[in-house]
Length: 193
Image 1: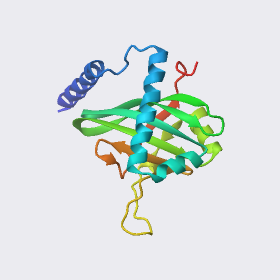
Image 2: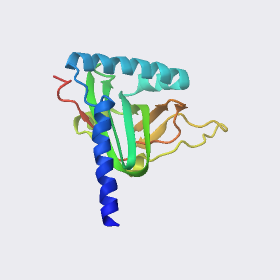
Image 3: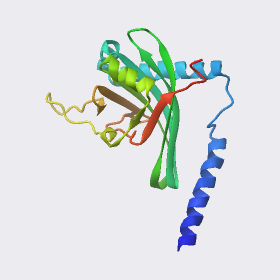
């Protein structure tokens, strides 16, 4: 029985490493190409968000800052991982900071999921903490949208930490539940040179 479990874990780990190469994780891009791709992703994501949730544009403009990430996740047998890249923008200074993200965990299944996330920071301290010390989304990030007081419409953003809202966009539109639990965010030292 233990040998079967170890075999499954070994196959899952090997499958992950093989699929990582085939799916373009760790592409050989120059820093300039990587930055250009992230900036294009940000523009596309924000345009999509403004179409899906028009009020988000005013929220982002009034915020201390925001961050936009593109995430690619895989679930292979018992191992689930996700990684991605993004950019944080300080509305006060106009400075962009390039960032990375990664999550790993356990979960039965097989599949691939892509989504984009836009974090909105209510105050400068929260934004600075996210960018400078990194951030790990813990259990509090497993949040779901709630009905607002105005009727049956669901809120488009999710409160994932004090002073931090998240808009999560999937192929089906705005997600009404955060899937960032266990995800680590940090500065990309190479792209910020």
